[in-house]
Image 1: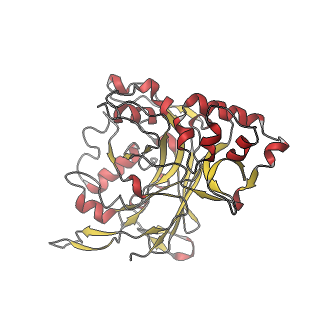
Image 2: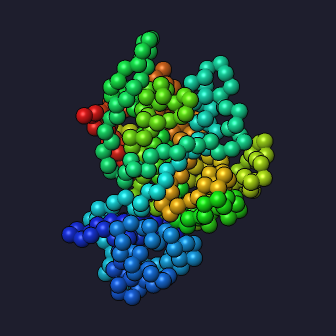
Image 3: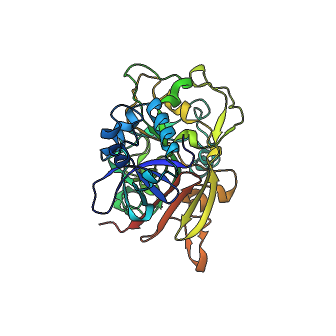
Length: 377
């Protein structure tokens, strides 16, 4: 796959949305390259790249993805291809694919441990199943938005401190979650689990993901069935999907206890540096290597009961936190649930997000995902 290349959908000035490949500060118009006869890596490529979403390209499978990347590599520096490129600042990215289903996992050991200590002080931080399976929940695909979309402060029920009954109103504990999103390309059959050793054949690529969270709504509603309104109002993803093969991997410590056979694979992790920027200040730096469960294990577990994958499924990693305070990927951890406010330049502090706050998550080789909080209606 071409190094440094990511795929998305963009609108040029005065034009309709079509597929593009971004490398640095340039965007190649894949639809125009196909029309010019320069890109024909798989049958139906011209139609797939002219569509306003990457769905057709993603569904074409790994052979098509690799052939496209190889063909694009031959066009680097080719004047014919350059005629069909744009400056990234001159195009408008849109949601790159149709989100089919959205599932969010809880795959960072340090994040799960921190949340357990905050929410269950004095008890065992991790639930008994955490080291045995990738814990997750099914989210709301219809509220996944592209980077740059404003996020409206949500309202819902919450139980205020010391109150005997719940109230309804805008959240006062609006948070972020620094995550990776794993994007499914090739679907699977209903009733047929995907083996862990073949799981990555279905994975088209990776985006940055911010799972905005209303912690007060979440705390009141999450028992007994888990997150609902506290999570479903907005999830932001980056506009450009990076192929998994373009990201560095490292060996990871062995998982203990050893997973059951259907989840067993040689331990590995992505080595992707990550950072959180709040109102122009970097407040955290983490790394994807802090994920305990791999995307292959997430896919194998999600389908173990026969659930099928669909083109455009989005699997969130869950918040990625490291062992140090400045490696925590959410405000509830960084500010220790409000007890240790985050200091910003100029003397401002934050425990959770205020209206007008701007958040940018960045990942080495993946780009960024940005969003700004606007007041509740």
